[in-house]
Amino acid sequence: MTQQAAKPNPLLEIAVTIVAPSIVLMQFSGEEKLGPLNALLLALAFPFAWGIYDGWRRRKVNWLAVLGVVSTLLTGGIGLLELDAKWLAIKEAAVPLLIGIVVLGSTWTRTPLIHLLVFNETLFDVARVNEGLASKGTRAPFEQMLRTATAMLAGTFFFSAVVNYFLSRWVVSSPAGTEAFNQELGRLTLLSYPFIAIPTTLMTLGLFFWLARNARTLTGLDIGEMLNGSESPASPQ
Image 1 (cartoon, one colour):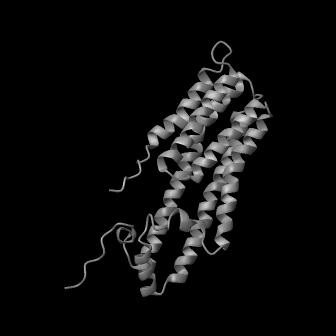
Image 2: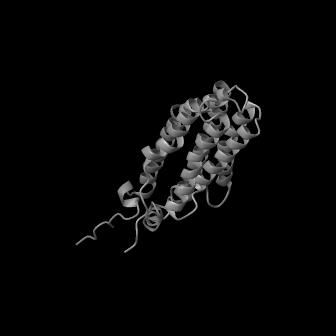
Image 3: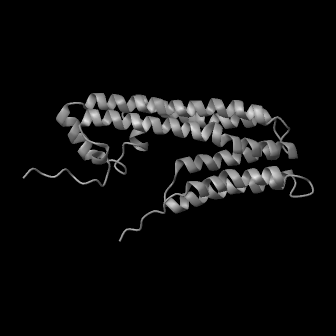
């Protein structure tokens, strides 16, 4: 019997990667407690450990988790080297900006990244979808839809980059290596969820609904029929 991968727990991930680091940074950075350096290292250990655990749990490399680990290391480097706070804003914007550029660039390749992220054999019964496209003669419009969706997905990363930069510049202004910097970094971590994570999630969900509606029109299949593991339509008697 094939062992199923453990299902992700979004609430636990939020608690470990957002809430716990923020509490440590805002409540334990004083000299009478952990101190700025130790509090920063402990706070960064939470998302770093989660990224490692997530990769181990999935038994494969999760490139988003890898980027999260890299981002955590960069934040730690800024704090340890006591760089100007503007470098934190640049780092916060650079990660989603680079992802957006890669995603957008893939629209000019044979396989836009939406193929890997959404329209893949793990989620969809690709053979059945291809049959639907062939029967309606809509392969070309379908491929164009996927390229448009890839560009729209890139737009969510560009939105994240812009908001990340200005939010970071607004919240974090104290020199790195200080208690004030840690507290501001903790507030930034908390604010990033309502200001960035929720809006980008809603935009991504809207994109998926748009994809599903157009795919239904182009293939003649309901979304349930397109998903992997759904039953084939009954043959006529």
